[in-house]
Amino acid sequence: MAPFGKDLHPGAAEFSDAAWLDVLTAVEGTYSDLVDYQERLERQNAELEGMRAFLGSILASVSDILIVVSRTGMVEETSASVATRAGRPRGALVGRTLTDLFAPTDQAALADALHRAATARASVTLEAGLMTPGGPTPVELNLSPRFDDRGRAAGVVLMGRPLGELRQAYAQLADSHADLKSAQAQLVRGEKLASLGRLLAGVAHELNNPISFVYANTHALDRYATKFETYFDRVQNGASREELVRLREELKLDREVRNLRDAVEGARDGAARVRDIVEDLRRLSSDGTGEMVSFDLVDCTRVAANWVIRGSKRQVALHFAGADRLMALGRPGHIQQVVMNLVQNAVDAMEDQADAAITITHLAEGDFAVLQVRDNGPGVPTTVATEIFDPFFTTKPVGRGTGLGLSISYKIAEEHHGALRLCETAPPGACFRLTLPKGTP
Image 1 (cartoon, rainbow, N blue to C red):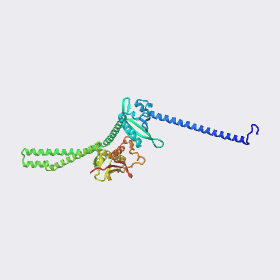
Image 2 (tube, rainbow, N blue to C red):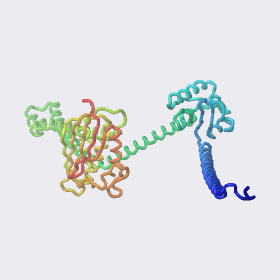
Image 3 (cartoon, one colour):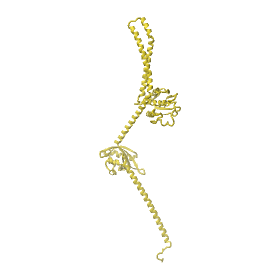
Image 4 (cartoon, rainbow, N blue to C red):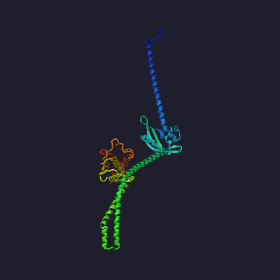
């Protein structure tokens, strides 16, 4: 029999120590895993709390209507704005059927929209009355389906805004658009008046010549009338034939009869010239508003360009090339403004140039009527070529330009469904190209 306190089997003590060591190691590993799991769980809980707080702040700050609905049509969450409009706390809304929040007359349409958004997996828009303490408030709602991690339909999200606010916003947008169009029209008129102001000297000169011609011819007609009155007075008083022949020779009536017709023709030509000048001015000063019409681009260009050249203080040769007649679709008054700006810029660019010349070319390209204005001046530097159509950009000295001419012209071309740009190959000089839709003959 083994002595008391001794192992029954040799090596049992060594086996027991190793086993305990394994157990302790396993316990320590398990405890470490539990600590790691606890730390991860705490981090995830912190993240969830942060996400919950983040979502809560969003729901509290969203001014639009936001409602999250389950697959069964129950309210799961709402923004604070919904509770404010409904006059009830958010907690009283969660768990209720969505349709209960809206007017009875709209509940059937809303239920149908929920079904369509969930089954068709597409957004649905409708109008419905949200129940408030003051009665139903019409709102525009957009229903979008939401999905879980596996892509299955989990419910619907409703976003909306009261129609009164939307209509007010649309009205403000329409007013702003009208103000913008009015401001643009004012800019166009202002720039056009500035261009016309530069032409006053040329206008005075153009009118003075034919008026002086008419005035001189009226003096001649008055002189002829006096001679004829003298002769017919003698005839009326019974003068003899010999006396009348002598008087006719003294007054040189035979020559004056021939001169009389020349004076009448001269006065008529001068008056016609004044009429043409006034007509050109009337066409040039028209504001160009109204409907788009078919017009002769060549004639329109000649009127505008000739007036700029007439008003210029320096000698500039003006040449026309290409088509003699080219129909375009647009507002002639606005197109004349574009041509005047282009020609005036060319004249200003060649201020100190003795051989200044401008060539205006008209041609048809497909469905467009094309106008090119080319000068033999210094051209447009490549460093500013991308900026010349920007508002208020100008290379002229202070006080010599507003920087609006080309930007307004660019906008006018766009409104005519055309374009204004620099020619791709401009040297020598500058070349601008205006394209407009073709008009009907």
